[in-house]
Amino acid sequence: MELSAEEKKVLSGVTFHSEEIENGELCDEDKAILENMRAVKKYLEEKYSKYQFEITGCEPKEGTARDYDEWYYKALEIDRDSAFIARASEVDGKLVIQDDFYGELIRKDAKEEIRKLLTADGFSVATVNVNFWEYFGDDCGQDIDASKVLTGKIPAGNDIKIFLDGSKVTGEAFDGEVTKLEKCLKKYDIKGDIYVVFLKDANGDLVRDRLYSDSFELE
Image (tube, rainbow, N blue to C red; front, side, top):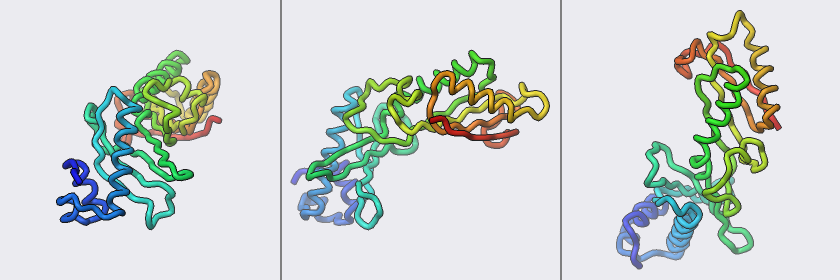
């Protein structure tokens, strides 16, 4: 059986049958893993046709509480230290695949949208970070809308961290500012887990220069 260098590397890391894999002599277990690996890569390249993907590893579900295999991958066009993750599970005899790559596509727009609406309401925003905890299959492709995700029309498990310039807050009025910020986000129908941090100034370090923090959930 012909295997690419990418396939040999991943399979060897999963099953440790290095010699057999190098010679293309796969056991049934390795063949099943290879079939799923190829299916995950095909799924990604068809769903996100503007990108090229490389599978970098796998954590099989065997021996875990998970009912899915975790596949690690990277997009060749994106410089990123950590891998993206796809989940593959058997449902009624069919391989069902979900991924987290959509978050990379909408993160910039989502961050800018949050920044704009807060700035419009008078908040001095240092920076915004947005992450998403859900995995999507073929129902959400490369044209996913950031606004629909932020407002919960597409429930993606929004995790929004907002860093504000604390030097603009007089006295110890941080609680009041958090209340105002919550009302602002509700006005724009933003959904998700919100974490708010006040920094000593607009250029403050996101870890070392924290003056106050709070969190709330918008459903």
